[in-house]
Length: 422
Image (cartoon, rainbow, N blue to C red; front, side, top):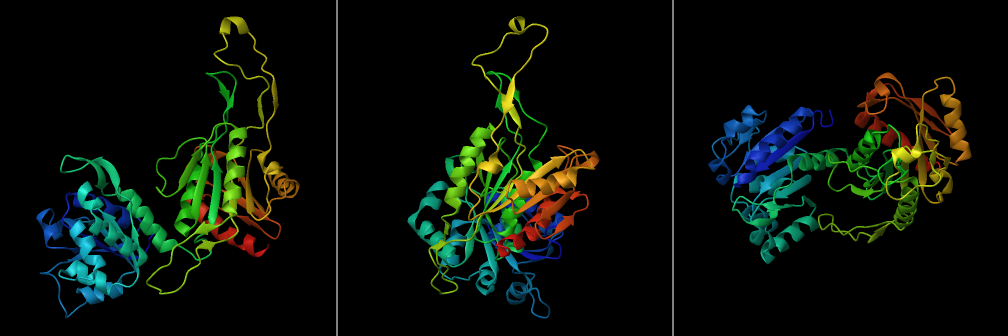
């Protein structure tokens, strides 16, 4: 219920990509948002208002439905809703928006709307690259609009190139971010590690573990929704994440350690932001907020002492194979934790010793907090639910069994206090 009781406007224009707007509408309603659709005259050449109402939209606002005895008009609709998505947005709509033209109900609503706005362009490649369209997109960005990236693919006109509308799931993610974003996380870099590391035996065999990487993916998603600039260092690519979550693929613990050290160093430099013309204020070009590291990866404790090239032959190994292992790199002990908030994750199967082991980890590895995961039953590896005990120097919080995304949002809220503790 990420968008429960949130009131969202969905503007649709005359593009063949309008069929994807129905899917976006359903995603929003599934998370219990209240959605009202605003249609341009050209959009009705593709779909009727009844189609959106049948899919769950409140009464559609269009020329024949606008009335002033109630609130179904462009002024009151703009007042009553908190996020305005225009998807698809044609070149015509984008160029008119940037120039303050309001010759249809959607554009009039946009001109009256002074809250969060998301635009998902959809057009031919040449129309997108036209200098007028590019200038309009730049002006909209400077005035507070979030512009979704287009896709490179075969377009409705049969040409191949940029211009296809972003996928509905990605627009949905951006809408959730607009709804849940908090000042604490905005322009703050959050690094998450995830997945089980892979330690090579030979070119076809390796040592790993049962970690699915789902908790790390959920945490990356939650941090993005909260407003952070998220980097996920992972042993497996996650396909269902927001497109703006940057993923770094690694294999071994040594690979992860090297990439993590580089990303921490970069994170400490801060992030660049551009002025927002809506506020008409000077915004610093460089923002430095203390970065966060969530070490959710399951790093192999041991690795083969002598990994081989090629494939070891079964005939040469015999009936019994004694594989010599050596201790792996301890990433949490090695990284430079100065100037960064570090949260470790610990998976335990022994319920009696779990809490003591987690507290020991907190002290020995000089962490700011530890998320203890007792791996059993519904919270076993690969499940969609989890239960953690969140342990910091000042408090211990027991979480009930929850969906991993819901749990990750809780972790984000609890973790905010760590920056204040210094």
